[in-house]
Amino acid sequence: MTKKEIVSLLILVLVISFGAYKYFTRSYWDTRTDQNLLDTAVTIQASSKSKNVRAQIDSVFAYMKTLERKFNDYDPNSWISRVNAAGGMSMPMDPDAFAVLTLADSLYRMTGGAFDITIKPLYDLWGFSDSTSVLNDSLRLPPDSLVIKETLKTVGFDRVRWDRDSIRLPRGTQISFGAIAKGYVLKKAVEYMQAHGFRQGQIDCTSSMVFFGQKIAQVVHIQHPRPQTQNTIGNFKLKNGSLSTSGDYQQFFESGGIRYHHIIDPHTGYPVPDVYSVTVITPDPAWADGLSTAVFLMPPDLAIQKLRQLPDTNAVIYYQSGGETVTLKTEGIKELDWNEE
Image (tube, rainbow, N blue to C red; front, side, top):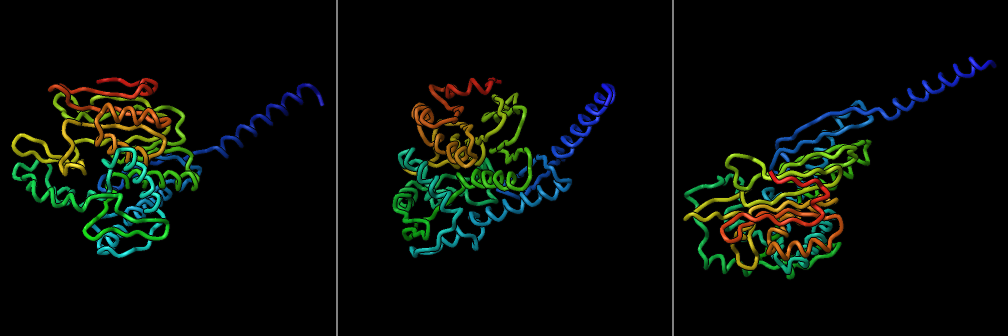
């Protein structure tokens, strides 16, 4: 074989190899939105090696809805509704519920009981469980203080008995996964996508987002808790991982010049004062969702101390101090190219 023929053969091999590489690593992109999932609009943008990526994304939505149905407070047939209606009787445990309860227990202990999923009776009392409630309704009034005091007697996660097989709530006690279920569903959705041929993607649930398989960091903006001339207050870059934001502007009403929002302190029975917004960035979407509420429920300085003990976890807290809006951030937020807007 001549030198020219050898060179030609090498070129042919390279062309075939490149073509094979492009074929086996080909990706198809699509973006789909479901307007009726997790009480918000959920958007999935993803790539897959399959041409049927649109149908694949639809299957992710279907999978997410099977999880949502277990934890839906408004559905009397859901697992959580049946547990709440058991009247003190023991009920069979669900594997996904066990995972959520395990995380809730960790957050309960970390916050000294401030993160408490038995908050539901108080949540209902304040009217935040009503899906038809109007935000910033000037006609709404806070509940009577004596009724709040009486309802507090039903709250206490430490009185719930549960294990891998069963769960039993004290009579009158009810649980809600509202502060953690969205993140858990996102976590399971990513696991589902990675097991079904998706190469990369992101899921956006407005207050929670998750990215996986990304090659380039995405710019993420934080909603301004008191928008006037701008809708966002800061931004950072995230390549892969998750974030969740809890804010006093998501569900609230005002009465007598006071804003009453949906993040309620189980020790007092009243919404947490002075904190406006908490964003947590961490690899696990379930942890991000639960932590954003847990941090909101703690004094900001203490919350930052607690977060320092958690690996790969960062947060930005906006709160009021001395009549001024103050921001408190973990040190690691600098590595995410944080930018105050």
